[in-house]
Amino acid sequence: MSGTKAIRTVAMTQAAAHGACALCTVLRHYQTQLVEVTGLQGVTHLCNHHAWLLARSAPADLAARIYAQVLEAQRKEDAHANKVCAFCAELRREEAVRLHELVQRMKVPSFVGWMRRSGTLCLWHASRLSESLPDVRPVVEEILARTVEELEVDLKKCLANSAREQHNIGGGVLGRMAEYLVCQRGIPGEETPC
Ligand SMILES: [Zn+2]
Ligand SMILES: [Zn+2]
View 1 (tube, protein in one colour):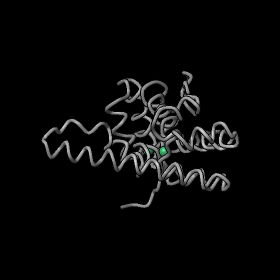
View 2: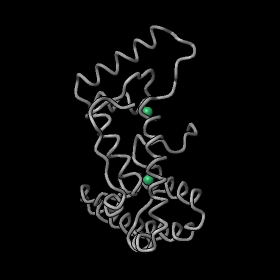
View 3: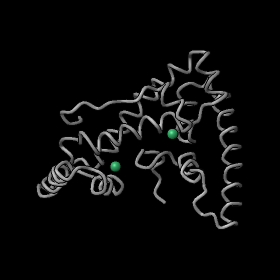
View 4: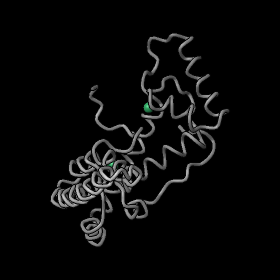
């Protein structure tokens, strides 16, 4: 239910080579396209993250059109109105499609071999992948163990650098750490309220 302009998507193999969670990478790219290029139609509700992301990153005309749709929905005070954030819902739909694509890739031995050596997954997508394809659970666990080892090394470097007051030398580890724990921002993961 995106707008009229086409969304360009990233191929899974290209995303996997990116050094971050393959699914987070394709979804982050998709979210950027939704917010900065195409928008959504018939939006009746926005979550905190996507309301602010529109204000910060969308072209003014696109953000204004979407906010107007939400206001219109509120004015109607429809008790049955959809209270789900339209961006979260669209990302969840895309997530299911791309997870299926990754599951198909993980049936190809050469891709599995590459993922085992160099691939990255966040905790959320690792567990989605293992649920969808239980056979790859051992490979997923190997990927997670290697990722955690790499993160721990980089966190130590980051701490050593901050002890020397080189505050800017985190090497991106803090962002990679956040992605590992909770996916990229805006991608619906665990939804248990804090
Ligand atoms: Zn992920
Ligand atoms: Zn949302």
